[in-house]
Image (cartoon, rainbow, N blue to C red; front, side, top):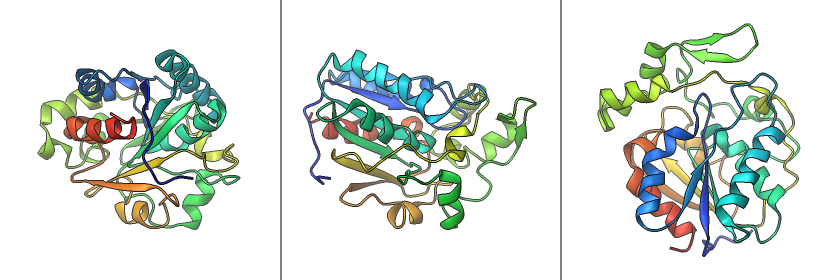
Length: 248
């Protein structure tokens, strides 16, 4: 895998993390559009029981073909979306992906489930980020709003506003966990330039893990200040990183 940022790319596909949908990327979509770089934020079917990686990848692949029109695209995965984006790059095949950008992301290991990787590497996740998680009858989980505001979104109000956090929390969905339980379908890391964005004050995915055991060999690391949701708190800065990966 090259450590040189790629491009030019025709567009960007943005993949959200757990409990979210594509609307969380709206500020970044706007920032990328302002520089003439089209972006699609997908809605993964991850709120449906039994949704596996393949089902999520199919949504990302379709979006890549739509926004790219046959030209290469940048795939961006945030948090749990980091388990999906590299597999989508694998599915799209050589020449279809200009770069991968992983933002505060979980990083898959070929042939290993995320649950097993997390057990083997203690300290990946910051304790308390999933406080208030409630199991539903269909075995998906939901977050109680008050707990999500102080757990998953801990510190974000100080970086943005309480109103912004309340709006984000109101849009959270149930989450199925098949993707973390199944063995990753990733065969090897895609041979595309990879950028890992580490959020220095991340209270969900440990920045120490992201810099250490979670680092992708050969990837370029970019550090942003603040917490786990730079698409909300630093959309212009994050858009700049993505645009650079796209060769803009």
